[in-house]
Image (cartoon, rainbow, N blue to C red; front, side, top):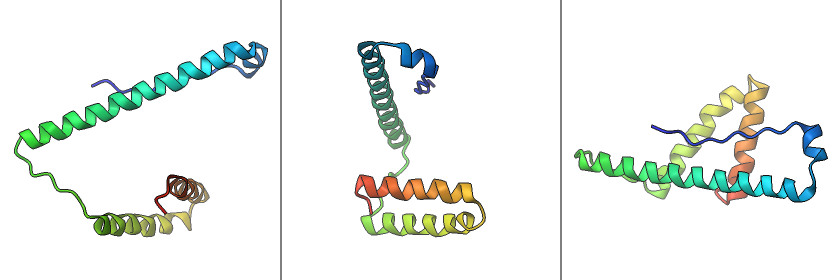
Length: 105
């Protein structure tokens, strides 16, 4: 199995010394690599689902109502940790902001 993740780090001083056109090239390369990795991961997931179905396992899809019940239960569960751990609270706040950004909530 190949995992697609491409961390890219540039020293701030080096980055600031690079001309803007070279910075733009690096940015475009990072976006392209990220997109390629995401597409390959999605294809790998599709292949996995096909193999599961071919193996004879019945695939079940949740209704939107069941999906919402699961999300609500997970947020309720996470709340008990948020109240005890500021790092968890910060993470869950990020999750809520992302969900709002994506239009889920």
